[in-house]
Length: 147
Image (cartoon, rainbow, N blue to C red; front, side):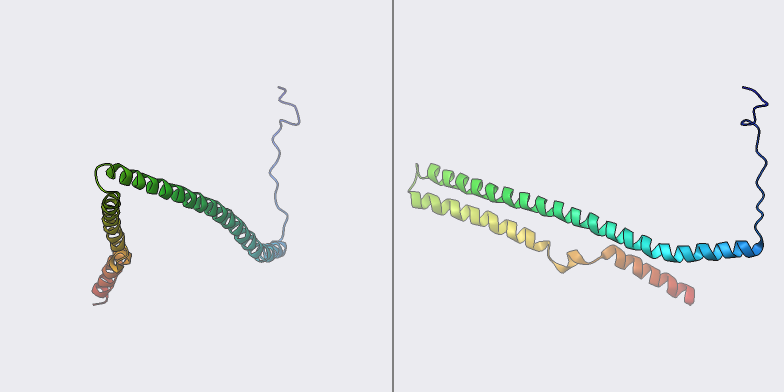
């Protein structure tokens, strides 16, 4: 390393020779450019969001189709298992009675599941309790400050 090497010598600081009028003009130019580019940026961001949302929806549709297909196959298997239970019971009782017992048991289980699911649709489950509590607290605080 040679200290006299011109590439290693520090360069003197560059002093701007821009006048105030030139500086104002460049600021105005930058502001104009900004007003042109910001809407374009938002447009591009919205287009990107739209493409990403469409890709997500496509993936969601494929997932729903897979779940629906699996549910259909699962239901078919469950029906066959119920038939096997009817056949097994028909070895010890009349076939019509075995089918009746299995049908009633499955209907009772289904009714209990239906009632449990119906409770999830009560209006009280959809009320935003925490948000309402926070709003009430804010309202109380404002009343105390005003009075």
